[in-house]
Image 1 (cartoon, rainbow, N blue to C red):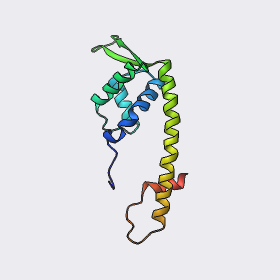
Image 2 (cartoon, helix red, strand yellow):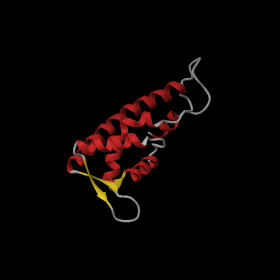
Image 3 (cartoon, rainbow, N blue to C red):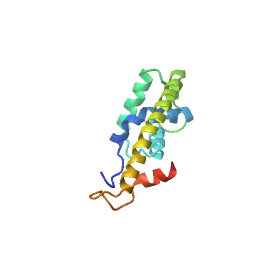
Image 4 (cartoon, rainbow, N blue to C red):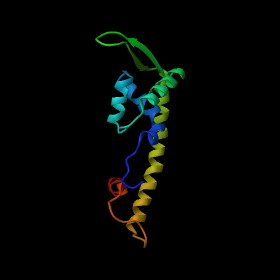
Amino acid sequence: MHGRELHGRELRGLLHPFLLLLIFERPGHGYDLIDRLRDLGMADVEPGHVYRVLRGLERDRSLISVWETAGAGPARRCYRLTAKGGDDLRSWTVRLAQLDQVIGACLRRSAGAFREARPGAPTGTPLPTDRYAAAH
């Protein structure tokens, strides 16, 4: 995995909270949301998967959608957050903060283990844990 970028399939579990957040910030249609996901680092997110998640969030009543026909081009489904979606986003935020603590502990421990330079430990390119340990 060394030197490999994260891919859409590895970030799929974050689509729910990311979409809720993006729609909370500003309602949007599918391709707008996909572009905004890319701005968050989900560069190769699969559009089909995004639309399946959006439909699921709508089924769960976290989102509503309305067809927008104004402007040039075909009608587009615009997604908006509901009160339940706001509650879901709040819950996700708490869970992500807890996950951040667990990941942070792992990264700090990894940075410490690599600093000890045990025989046979991988060497070479600086690890992201080095930057993380310095920042936290």
